[in-house]
Image (tube, rainbow, N blue to C red; front, side, top):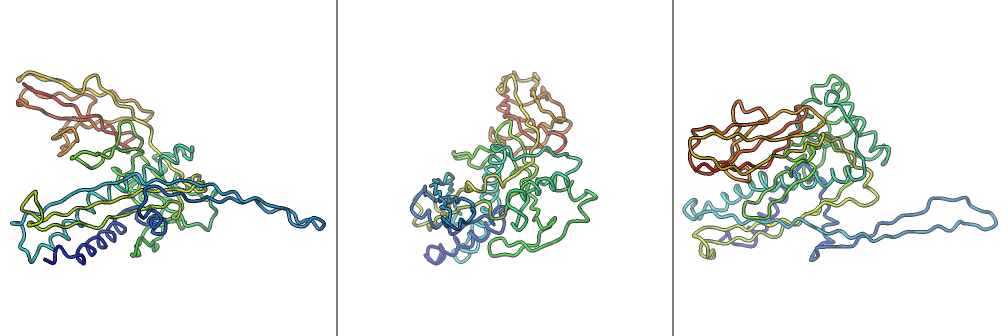
Length: 390
């Protein structure tokens, strides 16, 4: 069958790679030259070269001797992620399975793979900025000034002929567009991402890339279990803005060739099976570490006396979170389906640090969590409260 041909497998892989580069906020970091060095290896050693500067020429002794310092840096790819997807034989006729598979796999890359990779890459760059104290204290009321300060800090390191990019949290981006100063400086320019030329807004020649807030945290948990996916860790900061050279980071991505099985070959189910695997990481050379600058929210520390509560049917119980931050805090409670916050639904009028589970809550296990927001912008979720009604 054509669905199992090498040609179709290769075509799927190529198209998914193109979609990744086009949809990912960090797709332009892809470094195919560096990726080639990782063929058959998890770790490679790449030399960082440093030179001594010029010295005076001496008419008697001639040239001053200079040293070349070569330090070998090891780069190890950490993210090896995969998922097996199935389409039941009855859901599509054989003649249409290739088209349906393309749509499903494309949607999977767009909704699951791209968000995770963006979150991982941007959090790793944020950690570099924080670890090296390359941060500013901006004002929520003056986002344009914060962006200009970040640009200036990066340019003081790399100069003024280096192309820069600014990743901006979606809520800060909205405030930025409403600021009166930006209309004088903003332009629309070409921005090459993969094989596509995009139109992006630029400020003083710096491409401004809005990123949804869920991908702009400083640290995440990438679930290894069947649940999969990723989630922000507790007490993380939100990255309001991150500025670096467009060539300042190197995204190494290896999408292993797709494995496709027909229902006859699939021993687990009467379904077409698609195995997708992506192996990736982002690296910053030693010489570029101080060219990454960021503006981050205040840290929010959330705790609770008890995340596991048991109550008898017909009784109510109150859940309370204790949150600490330098900024102004607001609260919103959610009900969800499990400890991974699946199917989260906002609870109306639940906007205080405490939430009361009603007396008429039916028997069984129920899950809740609180979302704490700092200064109306950066949000952090509490752990999930499990409430057993018996």
